[in-house]
Image (tube, one colour):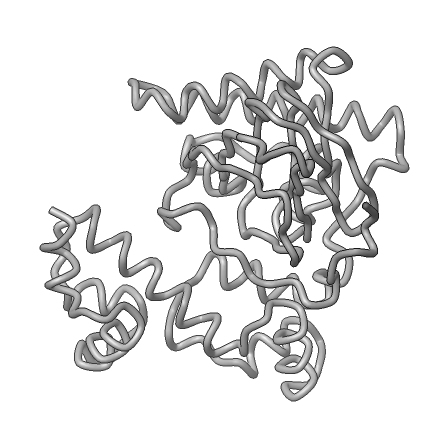
Length: 289
């Protein structure tokens, strides 16, 4: 099986692990034997293979994995994992909002890590615990702490994350060829990063195009080619995802949530939420209790 079997040019947008406004979230996943399209996340994705075997494909390389191996994928990097035909593989994956996680912990972003955190340039792939026990230990700590819901858990995750990023810098310092980035995604990366930090229905497509130094027409075409969504639809998905989180996890009024997400009139928020989710914001909130 080779990377050419997969459709690199039709990568789909894959939403972050549920809880889009959460800094860190861990879930268990089964990776199938046949998965047909590359995808990417707005978050850094780390994982540990619990059992099974298979191959991780990125835009520039491929890596075999088995139980105990660690996966590192930076934001906006297209990838796909495929289990061997003998059966599915089981993983624990953690999604990390790098910059927000660090800043919310009251820590500055180290200058030495700007290339990873700000530019999404670094190692992407599989690492084996026997060769990199320190990195495997960092990943295990982050995953364990994210599942405990214990005091200071997010702070400990942040400190382990910084240790992990520095150790990944060592990996690429020893082998510069292992440094990869988001490839063609970098053409619209300024817009994607802006949308990651400032989610508002009022965002103008012309402003996003200007950030990327391209015409609005070309930006719309490029954005759709890379994400699989028109810019307006992409923004709507982000806004509604944040609305779901705020309705589930806060007591803010629907009017306040509507204003937070940039709606000038709560009725506009109501109509969009019903169209996307199939129920009203108040019904959604009550259903989650």
